[in-house]
Amino acid sequence: MSSVLFASVVRVADGLPLSASTDYEQDRELHETRKHLKALSRKLSNFPDRCTFKSGVYNVNFTSALGVCYMMVCLSNYPSVLAFSFLDELQKEFIVTYDGKRVGAAVRPYCFIQFDAVIQKAKQRYNSPRSLSTKINMADMQTEIKLRPPYRLSLEDVQAINGFSSRSSAKYKGIAPTQTLEPLTLPGAVSCVLSVLCGGLNLLRGVHAIESVLQDEDEDFSSVIAFFLGTAACLYQCFLFAYFSVWRNLKSFLALGLVCLCNMYLFQLRNVWQILFHVAVAACMTLHTHLRQPLGKAPDYNV
Image 1 (tube, rainbow, N blue to C red):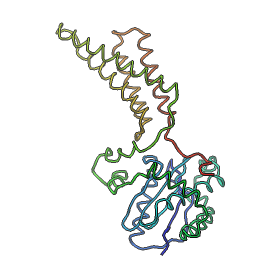
Image 2 (image 1 turned 45 degrees about the vertical axis):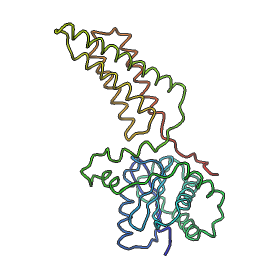
Image 3 (image 1 turned 120 degrees about the horizontal axis):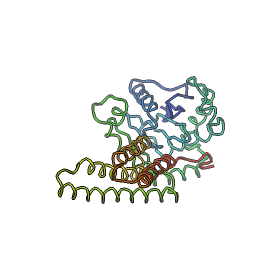
Image 4 (image 1 turned 135 degrees about the vertical axis):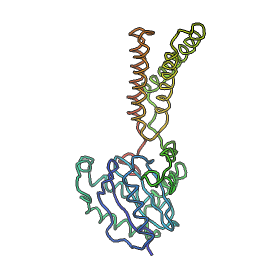
């Protein structure tokens, strides 16, 4: 029985299958595994760029880069270094053959089915590991896997992602910290420091507002809440900037909205320049969070 059983190439943004191997063995358990692969392909943007999912005697391995995901099904005892070296080879061949514009313009499933010829050749080679000639590349891959092992998805992760479980999506948010972000830039670091400063100013004003409320019962306690919400929003933006999180861009934008609302409410307690400063810092943090994307592989990786 072959070790590498099935492989496919999928667009990350919407899960559109671009190509796949056409000759695969089929049994009930393998059919269920391929159903899991198809379900995972629809939610690839929620996962790190390298994952493994065990389904009975089979493994689903996949790796993503430059908006395209390379997926495969193999026996669970097939070495990870060979599995991800196989996917890495598909990635390099696909990048050379198809540019990003063609991938983005694709509208029909399997519009690059001719890539199956490349998949078949790679399958034949990786199903006979002793005949492989890319030992240097595999040594590099083995080192990389030791340094940054693939995230191991559980069945609960897959069920939660696809709505088959009543558990909260927080179940699979633990995936996020395994993803590495791009290196910190100086403007991003400055924005983060200023955001912490804004949070500290909000906290200090909130403490003073509490003292005023305690001294004068007629004081409005809602301003205290606005100051502390502003503090939380600023610090949360720093967290989103520093660590990968599912939907982190959306969360950062919502935190920006909260900062704006809090400052609108505190309009009577701050002058225009103070409000503009707080809003501008929050906007910069949102921008730099968006710019600091998860670290993917370069097109010439291992070339």
